Amino acid sequence: MANQNIHEGENFSKVTFTENQLNNKTFNKCHFYHCLFNEQILCECIFEDCNFEGCDLSLSKLNNCRFTDVEFKSSKLIGIDWTKSSKTFLEVGFENCNISHSIFTGLNLKKITIQECEAKDCDFTDTNLTESSCNDTDFAESIFSNTNLTSADLSHARNYLIDPNYNMIKKAKFTFPEVMGLLSNLDIIVE
Image (cartoon, rainbow, N blue to C red; front, side):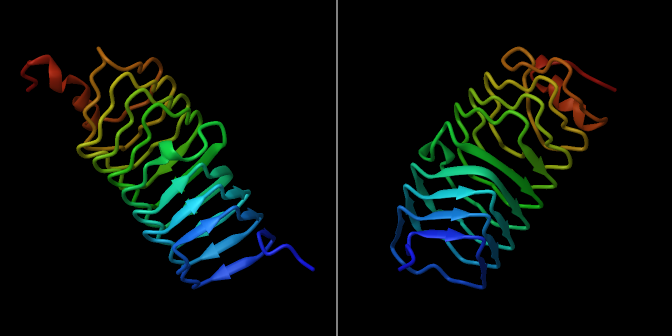
């Protein structure tokens, strides 16, 4: 008899997960296409080497979930508190996603990809974004405080307010005119 809590190499297409909670499920090398997880509670779930494309996980609760080598593409992940997932097993990437209103406080997201995303009103306080790729992402109203952006690529990222006095930005890559956001707290006039 197959274990109903372990899913290996499965494709899920247009599935609406309606259970109030997804508990103790393992997904390995699974692909999720246009699935709905929004407002679900996921507890103790493991996602390894999985892809989510066109999915909606908005307002989901990720209680002690593990994400290893997980890619999200063209998906909605609005209002997720990523600090509730396993901090030692959080290896995710976002491409063309909406991750607005999410919390990443204190997480080690070294080498994360947040590319061509909407990341409005996110909290990156005390977050390690070393060597991350955040190009062409909108960071309007997002908080960067004591954030490590060493060698991060913020090419064509926009609407960010990053104070160099309170964040590590050594060797980070920025583009003009967006780089002017680094000067916003200096009370200077640039003509």
